[in-house]
Length: 283
Image (cartoon, rainbow, N blue to C red; front, side):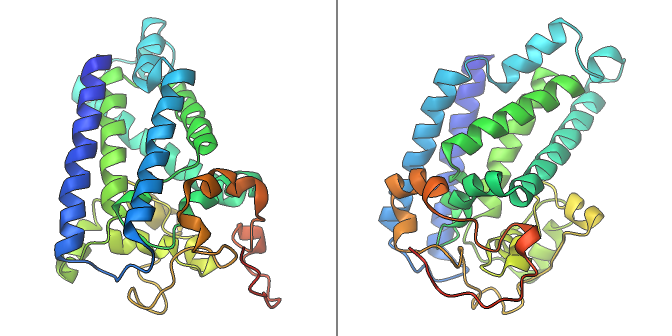
């Protein structure tokens, strides 16, 4: 299973990177402001670094965790009899809810937000933004997802399907692609679209703390965190964080150091309604 999983994940990653990268060149939604070669190198190098770290410190992998839990009948779904297809669908939906809640937590807890800032500090929004996460955030996220897999008792196949879907939809929802408004409106019933998720990367703290979904949009609708569009429109909205210089936010060493050298800004919800003026002290 591990070889099949690795091949499938790599194939999806490379295929979508090429397909969405080409779409971004042919029909971009916004004009990029930072050097694309530098950004892509740093973002993809961070993916490579995270992949190595996962191999070294999380050898079992989420699918392996699911198999281990199944062999010991841990978790809810390992102790009930359901049709296999229904079990997979339920597990994928429940794991997607867990990821939504995890994402909200990474915004709400200042210490976790420091790690998550690496993702939001990207001055542009394209397919590689969906891959750009601090290594420590990846580790904490894996621990949370592994706990959810064990408690739920998700089958290894369900975990594999979920992981591939999450990777694919994260790349799609962060892509800088233009599509007809009718397509976007239809797709938003089933999946997070780029125009929907781009709002989440606005410099406006209120907009940053909305549209948390990576995969399914339903949780934002259900929990009241949905925002249909940025206040100033997609072309005029500013991407990134207003207390972090976009010039530095494209360099890999600085990204790795970011959680330890910069403050949280006003982005955690506890700071969101602070009316005090903010000086531009970005470094």
